[in-house]
Image (cartoon, rainbow, N blue to C red; front, side):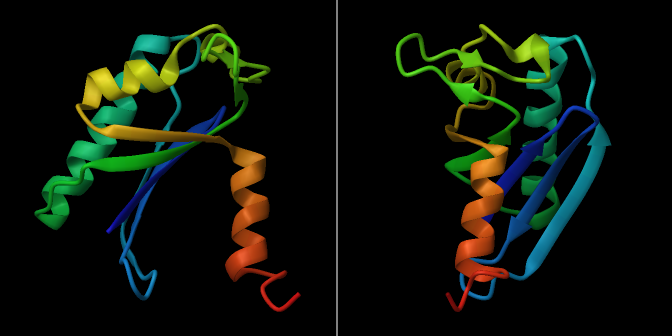
Length: 124
C-alpha cells in the first residue's frame, strides 16, 4: 500500500492506494491547524495511525507533498506559504514523531509528476 499526505494551507489529507491497481483504499481530509508546527506534526501522525488501523496494516514509510521545498544546505523547509513550516526540520521531526521513513516533496512537483505518469500527460 502507498500512503501519501497532502499538506496544504487549508487542509491536510491522507490517501492510501493499493500497490498494483492504485485503487483508493482510504482517504481522509481534516482542516490544517494554522500557525502551529507541533499540531501539524500531530495531525499527520494521527492520520497515518488512523489509516493503518482502518486498513489493519503497518507501513514503514509514507510520502508528504508540502507547500515549500527542503533546503539542500540546512535540510529545513523554505519558501512555504504555510509559513510556520519555514525553518523547521520537517523530515526529521515527522520521522521522530511517527517512527517511519518519510519522503518530502514540493506539492507542485508531485502534481506535475502525477500528471506526467498517470494523468493528462500520460501518453506524451
